[in-house]
Image (tube, rainbow, N blue to C red):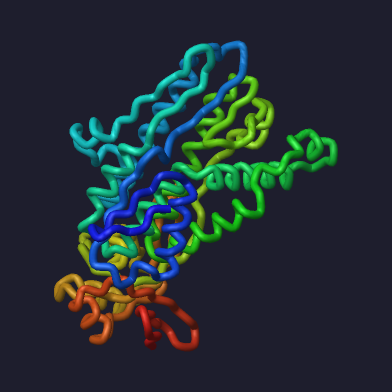
Length: 374
């Protein structure tokens, strides 16, 4: 592992380097740093190994569809991180051109690989001045590990297998699935570390969900091979892929979102409901809320939202939300309060990493780096 030099540049040469620096960032090692730049060498890469009659230095049209989705998901990752929008359509043609990766097929086989180093290097450079050093390291390395770590895909495969087994109604069906353990205890511990980073940047969770969905699609598109390995996983039989990734309707996942928000717009032009657009101060996420006038929120709370829009002051919001593939698709407000002067003072000082929680006894509380507040 290379030490940090005087120019505050950290070179990542392999996955172990990435995990080591990532953990140090989460533990607070870079809290007092004024400037850090990450560079990548040799890692991460896309690595797909195929075995089958159809795959002798050639790919099928179905395989190509999977690679196109992989590229599109890379675009989405960059769009969310840099522009706060999980949609490749938000990128310019110039951005797409510089983020395009080249897939190579090895002679005499159908091993496919592509470097992610260029994309991660571009993302790291573009985010250098946008985040403080600790959050910069957590964000950039979190993305690199979501995309490039064997542990990320292995634990996802294990989870999908466990779901498949749990859904089977007979012992015979349970016994038909591949008996292997896809993920080790060490890999699950690494995923716990990654999950801990979501509190510092919730976008990482969205990116993880997006990449998981891409990997499911990729494996299915390559299931015309007899066996497949992606990102260093053990070879998986085509039958196993078809079993654990049997197409199911993807439903929205219910979740809670408590936080500090700025009101961008309140639209009361429709008689039976009004629309509120808010921005999460901690991560910049935009949430659009439709509220029926007949329930959910009283006139006092509605007035609080309108006052916050007019006066440009933040509010504390408690919401039930639904996420679909990591994107908030529905939100309803449970509570809203004006932000106290103490929070506004922190924001004016440039502090946005304010974690908001709710309890039935104490109501809204917020946590800064060193203090809890009611």
